[in-house]
Image (cartoon, rainbow, N blue to C red):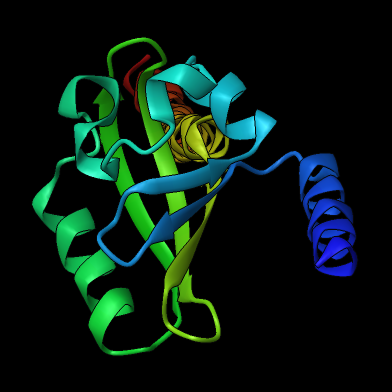
Length: 167
Protein backbone atom coordinates (compact mmCIF):
# COMPACT_ATOMS: atom_id res chain seq x y z
CA UNK A 1 0.00 0.00 0.00
CA UNK A 2 2.83 2.43 0.82
CA UNK A 3 4.53 1.36 -2.45
CA UNK A 4 1.42 2.35 -4.38
CA UNK A 5 1.25 5.67 -2.54
CA UNK A 6 4.93 6.40 -3.30
CA UNK A 7 4.48 5.46 -6.96
CA UNK A 8 1.39 7.67 -7.18
CA UNK A 9 3.24 10.58 -5.54
CA UNK A 10 6.16 10.08 -7.93
CA UNK A 11 3.90 10.08 -11.00
CA UNK A 12 2.07 13.18 -9.80
CA UNK A 13 5.39 14.95 -9.16
CA UNK A 14 6.32 14.30 -12.78
CA UNK A 15 2.94 15.60 -13.96
CA UNK A 16 3.39 18.76 -11.85
CA UNK A 17 6.61 19.64 -13.71
CA UNK A 18 4.78 19.87 -17.05
CA UNK A 19 3.55 23.36 -17.87
CA UNK A 20 0.49 22.14 -19.76
CA UNK A 21 -2.65 21.97 -17.59
CA UNK A 22 -3.91 18.48 -16.79
CA UNK A 23 -7.05 17.30 -15.04
CA UNK A 24 -8.08 13.83 -13.97
CA UNK A 25 -11.85 13.21 -13.96
CA UNK A 26 -13.68 10.30 -12.39
CA UNK A 27 -16.25 8.21 -14.26
CA UNK A 28 -19.03 10.76 -13.61
CA UNK A 29 -16.79 13.63 -14.79
CA UNK A 30 -15.96 15.10 -11.38
CA UNK A 31 -12.48 16.50 -10.85
CA UNK A 32 -10.37 14.01 -8.94
CA UNK A 33 -7.12 15.92 -9.33
CA UNK A 34 -5.84 18.94 -11.21
CA UNK A 35 -2.28 20.14 -11.52
CA UNK A 36 -0.79 23.51 -10.65
CA UNK A 37 -0.73 24.57 -14.32
CA UNK A 38 -4.52 24.08 -14.47
CA UNK A 39 -5.07 26.27 -11.41
CA UNK A 40 -2.73 28.98 -12.74
CA UNK A 41 -4.09 28.98 -16.29
CA UNK A 42 -7.75 29.23 -15.28
CA UNK A 43 -7.26 31.22 -12.05
CA UNK A 44 -8.91 28.57 -9.90
CA UNK A 45 -8.00 27.06 -6.56
CA UNK A 46 -8.00 23.50 -5.33
CA UNK A 47 -11.02 24.30 -3.19
CA UNK A 48 -12.87 25.55 -6.31
CA UNK A 49 -12.25 22.32 -8.19
CA UNK A 50 -11.96 19.33 -5.84
CA UNK A 51 -14.83 16.89 -6.38
CA UNK A 52 -16.61 19.47 -8.52
CA UNK A 53 -18.09 18.35 -11.81
CA UNK A 54 -16.08 19.64 -14.79
CA UNK A 55 -19.20 21.32 -16.19
CA UNK A 56 -19.78 23.21 -12.91
CA UNK A 57 -16.30 24.77 -12.81
CA UNK A 58 -15.74 28.51 -13.26
CA UNK A 59 -19.41 29.49 -13.28
CA UNK A 60 -20.20 26.66 -15.73
CA UNK A 61 -17.73 28.00 -18.31
CA UNK A 62 -16.72 24.43 -19.20
CA UNK A 63 -20.34 23.47 -19.92
CA UNK A 64 -20.30 23.65 -23.72
CA UNK A 65 -21.98 21.20 -26.09
CA UNK A 66 -18.73 20.38 -27.95
CA UNK A 67 -16.88 19.60 -24.71
CA UNK A 68 -19.80 17.52 -23.43
CA UNK A 69 -19.70 15.49 -26.65
CA UNK A 70 -15.92 15.09 -26.42
CA UNK A 71 -16.04 13.83 -22.84
CA UNK A 72 -18.96 11.49 -23.51
CA UNK A 73 -16.96 9.98 -26.35
CA UNK A 74 -13.90 9.57 -24.10
CA UNK A 75 -16.09 8.25 -21.28
CA UNK A 76 -18.06 5.62 -23.20
CA UNK A 77 -16.16 4.84 -26.42
CA UNK A 78 -12.78 4.22 -24.77
CA UNK A 79 -11.07 6.25 -27.50
CA UNK A 80 -8.33 8.81 -27.21
CA UNK A 81 -9.41 12.18 -28.50
CA UNK A 82 -6.76 14.55 -29.70
CA UNK A 83 -6.46 18.11 -30.95
CA UNK A 84 -9.99 19.15 -29.97
CA UNK A 85 -10.08 22.94 -30.25
CA UNK A 86 -12.32 24.95 -27.95
CA UNK A 87 -12.59 28.73 -27.94
CA UNK A 88 -14.45 30.06 -24.94
CA UNK A 89 -14.68 32.86 -22.38
CA UNK A 90 -13.61 31.85 -18.87
CA UNK A 91 -14.77 34.18 -16.06
CA UNK A 92 -11.46 34.58 -14.23
CA UNK A 93 -9.09 33.79 -17.11
CA UNK A 94 -10.68 35.60 -20.05
CA UNK A 95 -11.08 34.41 -23.63
CA UNK A 96 -8.97 31.36 -24.39
CA UNK A 97 -8.42 29.06 -27.32
CA UNK A 98 -7.66 25.59 -26.01
CA UNK A 99 -6.41 22.40 -27.62
CA UNK A 100 -7.75 19.51 -25.54
CA UNK A 101 -6.72 15.87 -25.55
CA UNK A 102 -8.77 13.33 -23.58
CA UNK A 103 -8.00 9.72 -22.82
CA UNK A 104 -9.67 7.16 -20.63
CA UNK A 105 -7.10 5.74 -18.23
CA UNK A 106 -6.71 1.99 -17.95
CA UNK A 107 -9.50 0.43 -15.92
CA UNK A 108 -12.03 2.95 -17.24
CA UNK A 109 -12.61 4.75 -13.94
CA UNK A 110 -10.83 7.97 -14.90
CA UNK A 111 -10.30 10.32 -17.83
CA UNK A 112 -7.18 12.41 -18.26
CA UNK A 113 -7.55 15.80 -19.93
CA UNK A 114 -4.49 17.53 -21.26
CA UNK A 115 -5.16 21.17 -22.10
CA UNK A 116 -2.90 23.40 -24.15
CA UNK A 117 -3.61 27.13 -24.17
CA UNK A 118 -3.06 28.10 -27.82
CA UNK A 119 -4.57 31.59 -27.53
CA UNK A 120 -1.29 33.41 -28.22
CA UNK A 121 -0.45 31.12 -31.14
CA UNK A 122 -3.89 31.64 -32.72
CA UNK A 123 -3.55 35.39 -32.26
CA UNK A 124 -0.08 35.33 -33.87
CA UNK A 125 -1.39 33.24 -36.79
CA UNK A 126 -4.21 35.75 -37.34
CA UNK A 127 -1.77 38.64 -37.20
CA UNK A 128 0.56 36.84 -39.62
CA UNK A 129 -2.32 36.33 -42.09
CA UNK A 130 -3.27 40.01 -41.79
CA UNK A 131 0.32 41.12 -42.50
CA UNK A 132 0.53 38.74 -45.46
CA UNK A 133 -2.71 40.22 -46.87
CA UNK A 134 -1.33 43.73 -46.44
CA UNK A 135 1.90 42.69 -48.18
CA UNK A 136 -0.04 41.20 -51.10
CA UNK A 137 -2.12 44.38 -51.35
CA UNK A 138 1.06 46.47 -51.33
CA UNK A 139 2.59 44.31 -54.06
CA UNK A 140 -0.54 44.74 -56.19
CA UNK A 141 -0.42 48.51 -55.71
CA UNK A 142 3.28 48.54 -56.63
CA UNK A 143 2.57 46.58 -59.83
CA UNK A 144 -0.25 48.96 -60.75
CA UNK A 145 2.06 51.91 -60.04
CA UNK A 146 4.75 50.48 -62.33
CA UNK A 147 2.20 49.84 -65.06
CA UNK A 148 0.82 53.37 -64.74
CA UNK A 149 4.37 54.78 -64.79
CA UNK A 150 5.18 52.81 -67.94
CA UNK A 151 1.99 53.98 -69.65
CA UNK A 152 2.68 57.59 -68.65
CA UNK A 153 6.27 57.31 -69.96
CA UNK A 154 5.08 55.88 -73.32
CA UNK A 155 2.34 58.52 -73.54
CA UNK A 156 4.89 61.25 -72.79
CA UNK A 157 7.16 59.94 -75.59
CA UNK A 158 4.24 59.99 -78.03
CA UNK A 159 3.28 63.54 -76.99
CA UNK A 160 6.87 64.67 -77.42
CA UNK A 161 6.91 63.24 -80.95
CA UNK A 162 3.55 64.83 -81.79
CA UNK A 163 4.66 68.21 -80.44
CA UNK A 164 7.92 67.94 -82.39
CA UNK A 165 6.15 67.21 -85.66
CA UNK A 166 3.49 69.86 -85.07
CA UNK A 167 6.12 72.59 -84.66
